[in-house]
Structure formats: structure tokens, C-alpha cells
Length: 406
Ligand SMILES: [Zn+2]
Image 1: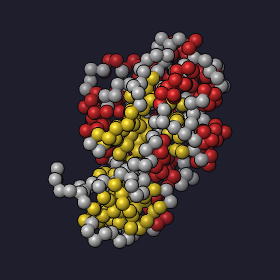
Image 2: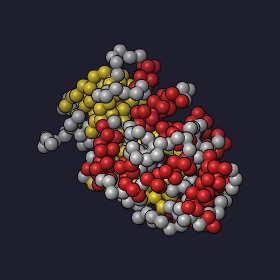
Image 3: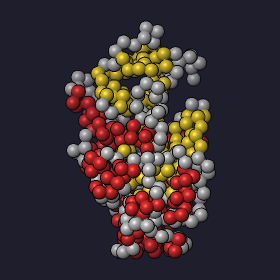
Image 4: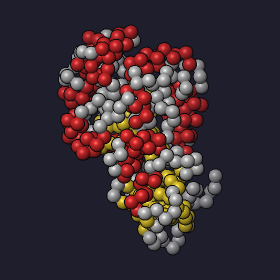
């Protein structure tokens, strides 16, 4: 590492997208002390200048939902063959047999790949907090959601927020899902989450919807799965006919709630999510693999829901890069504006994790952690986002920690 003081550095790219509504050509991003000072066509005379060339400079990506500690199950978990309950059954069968594997090393590799693909912040579900150390060592900022399940298992520690040598480590609270955590505990966990984000998997599968409604073959299979896992179903009292209605009745959905998946949410329910100010995270490849569908994003966007993007874990996604997730959204939702897709992968995630003051945009005062996406020269303005969302070739994405060394 160089001991040279970072000073003021100005980075120029053919295009810079600082955040929603702000795509600029040929500007300089001025960075001081690791934070964005301004985006300008006249950098200060004392600034060291670095020209990145043809491409798009954008905020570092935010993976709002993953499970880093499950990385060791990559390639060992069952194929997600659009059978959610079957996949759960396979996963609980395979996991104990491989707990001897070096989970830390697998996590470190996964984090390194995510960092190289431009991810700077992750919302990470955990039962062990074992991923915190390798994530910190690789410079990945994390919101670690300690995840409670059942009536008493895995009580999350008290929420906290700390900067450790420039890397943010937040410890927050999650509940697994409406079908696996009793009503009273959901409320207690939400209270415990306090001013930090509270995360819960919601309406991921048809099985969950049927189980809450107390009907249907998939619901029956999920019920049997929970019984086999020792769950006392008397603990589960539902206060609404559908998963979201249940959570709304419990008062656990507000602007600090991060709802994950929402595959089965209806347009009407998305209006309720928006009214509550909650965020919705979709995990396109995982959702498609496990259920064959993704939440209706056009309706979510029209309703004004804060949308964000996750990969989910390596048990249901092939890697932790957000680029194939964005490319999948482009393919499935061609009418979704490409800038909205980029917003999901940046500011949407930062807002959902309560950290938009530091991440998700390159506005003044934000951390100068950015991604440079190489693009052909001479692009028309209208073509920039479309091109940027094409699945990148190796070497086309560069993670930049703009503290002096690119
Ligand atoms: Zn998950």
C-alpha cells in the first residue's frame, strides 16, 4: 500500500451517472478524503486527474439481500427446479452433511467476486455472523441481519452500527418469514430493530400464500415440512388472509422494513407496501429458479415502492454479481426504464438499508466508492443505460475505491 496522502483527486469518464435523473457527459468527479466533493466540468487546479476513458462511472452497487455464510453450499444445494418446498426439503437434507467444509474460505471467495463485480454494500442474512470478518477483510460494507426463526431460535443481538477502519458494519434484526415466526415474536423483533432496518422474507412462494390461507396442496406440503422440522403449528396465528395482510395487521411494516422477494404480491398489495413506505427487494435469478416468477415490478414502480435488488445466496443463484440480475430484469421487463433498474441496484438498496447518506449515489458527501463500466466510444445519450446493462464481458467492470488508488 502506498503511504501517499489521498489529497484531492478528480476522475473523468465519458459518462457519469451520479444517481437517478443525473447522467452527465465528460464531467469530473472530485473526491476528497474518500468522499465525493462535487461533479464538475472544472476540477480544482490542485487535484490529481485520472481519466477513466470511454464508459460509465456509477455508484458502487448494493446487494440488498444475500446469505454470505451459505456460500460453502455452492454446487451442493439442490437444483432450484421451480419447486420451493422441494428445494427447502433438499437444502435441510444436504446442509448438515457439509458443515465441516471451510465456510469462511468459501465466504471470502464469494465476497471477493462480489467486490470485483462492483458491489460495495450488502444486506446479509445470518445465523452465525461468521461472514462479518471475511467481508470486512475484503472491504465489503455490510448490514448483517441476525435472523430469528421459530418461537425462540437464533435471538439476534442488539442492533449496532460501527465504522471499522473505514468499513461499515451494521448489525440489524431479521425474522425469517411469516410462516416460520410467531406473531408475538415478529412484533418483538420489529421493536428490537429500532431505528435500523428490519428484514423479512415475504410472499416468496405460492406455498407460503396457501399455507397462510390454510388451503391448497402447496400449503399442505409447507405445513408438513414445518411439522417435520419440529415447528408447533399452534404457535402460528395469522391475522390476515395473506402474508402481507398478516404483517400489516401486526404493525411490522413501515419505512424501515425491507420485504424480500414478494413474488406473490398483487398490484393492490404493492400499493399497500408503498403506502407503508417499505422497501421491496427482488432476487431475479433465485426467484425465477425457485418459483418461476418475479414480483410484478411495473406495478411496484407505478405504486411508488422503493425497489432494490439482491442475489440471494449461492444455494439458489450461480454467483453474487448484480450484473446478471440486472440483465435478467431487462429481459423479463423490457418496459421497465433501464435507469430504474440501475437505481434498484444502487440508491434503492442504500435506502432500503437506511444508508443512503453514504451509499447508492455519487452526490456530494457520499462515499467515493464507484464502478466503472467500460462502453464503446461515441455513444448517444439515449443508448448509455441500455449498453451499460448488457451483461459485461470480463474486464469491462472495474470496482473503484476512490481514495487515491484506482
Ligand atoms: Zn433469503
